[in-house]
Image (cartoon, rainbow, N blue to C red; front, side):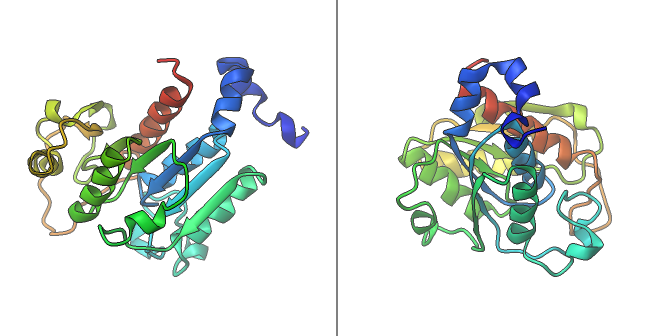
Length: 231
């Protein structure tokens, strides 16, 4: 099949006009882990032509159980480099910017400076960084969806996309709700799980392959539907 026809099946579903919308959209994804790795792949396969991926980490052997980019051959390599290589193998004409940075209030403006971003996906775990991303999106009127906790979960059917003020159960969502009130940010689209976190004998959250992956695909679907306005 010729490369320009690789989105033929998608075009049959959403139409040529919406394919062009996706081609002309720019999405920034913060965090290329269990959730984020599936987000960027689904976005790329949907026809998003411009992607910015931000993550400072390298692939660790403990990532293999849940992260799309994690294999034994990628251990020790930068996640954004592996992800970029994979995306370009899917769509060689994708404009993908890989940034190896830990996000904070001090550098988020520089990371996204002079780039017109249509949508931001927050798929990271650290609260301070999440708040920096959310506040930047709010101040700059950029659409955003933020992923809440996916660790210590076993039932992917419990995920739901809603406003942060309608969430329950999720410990991370509770913290974010409280902090957003301090920042006078009234709303935030999030993906969260209604499943009670399982108790594990570890300070590190437990995980499994089919939970964060589903979260990532749900988020990607929401982004695409928002961008083409066919909800």
